[in-house]
Image (cartoon, rainbow, N blue to C red; front, side):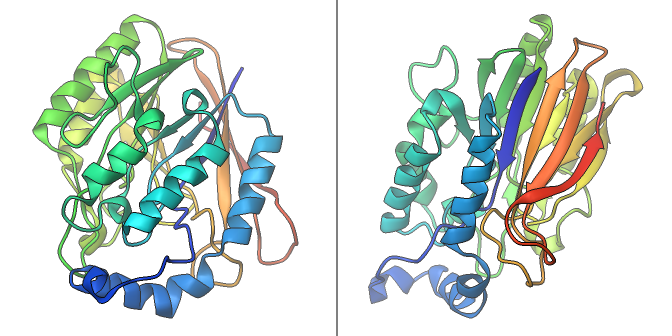
Length: 300
């Protein structure tokens, strides 16, 4: 049995000191949103509690599906790299970027450079960077495939993009993993499901992603972005159904408009055609103190 932990939307704070030039972009709207909303509802002490409980569960690997930052400020990029060092060794943690990690033009390049060790695919001479996703890492019976939906967008937009180049590379990696009888986990920030996110936050390329799933197969899709603990299903090869699992924001305090902080644990066993997946959600609730089990769900 292989245990995979999943968390997302960490939104590390507090924000570093800002100069006026830092706000001469889309960042001004994000800064206002952070001051009005995120500063109160997302808290680093909650993140610390979530991570401590997750490590106590002794996962074999950790998947983080983006939005470690808020505005992609240079200080945030460095802070996120240091936080990843505390989360785990690069071989033990796999990461994909979110829209807040690519908040303004050129931010994604800097983010990828900082997170490079945690996005180094097996056999790659250099880590994934903008334009070279997805990457694949094999850990035990799992193939962890990191897709990037992150891109800079206009103010008041938080959409993602999955294009033709990534589609072709993803198909190749999925086929390679299938030939090796591996359990295929695809990590992406934006949910590749219609209606899972509001129009201004949706993924462009959902049909393209689902077509790859239908033709080449996947066993599990992990995403963030919505700050919701959800399970959707998309079609796979030969009438199979693929679970698409989201998670609450890792730093969300109780009592807000979204569910309090959680993380996911997947216990995965079996073999191709008869994989067994047990999902356990752990986190904070509005009625209890400390981290506890929220729910369990059998996905396969």
